[in-house]
View (cartoon, rainbow over the protein chains, first blue to last red):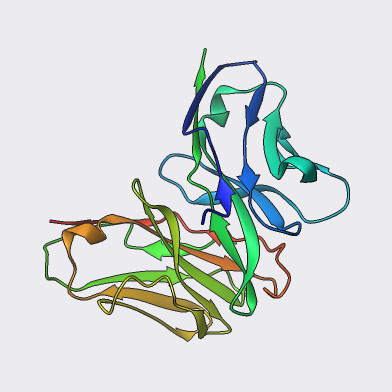
Length: 115
Length: 117
């Protein structure tokens, strides 16, 4: 069973427009949640993470994410997208497995930014 | 800090050949992960080491795959014999935190793009 779902495979936004990337998880309790970004030809880089506390989390590069328990969601947002934000974005969860917190990545959302 | 170092960056080999991928984690990190990324299956965890000991190898696809971590600064992922379906990008990642808590950051290397013909 999928523990983390990213329903959008590809999203296109205009430079300067706002962005929201969706992520849903399936787990009985609140898991550890992450957003990573992968630029072409590179490895993944952590944008932000959440486990407890304030449900609005600030990350690097002007990104933020909001945890909503009622919707089992952890959506990533940015108020104004820059051309350099074009990349693939991965939501991830850490769940207990075999004595440690195992991270499982979603299938990713590829962001295209048009001028 | 140089970050996680992987070599080679690109590898093209023929079916049946042995392939060895190498990884140097960030100094001081005690956890190391090998991932495989493909269009069809996304990013999959192959194996996780903690303090040089394999903790979770449930993602290793079959006996053709093996991984070692002889010391804290070096790990290898070997495929023998290689097959065309092994073509993928292989990432190594390391983390400094103890993984009993889940809010650890993984630092990824640039990956090795493997093509098996």
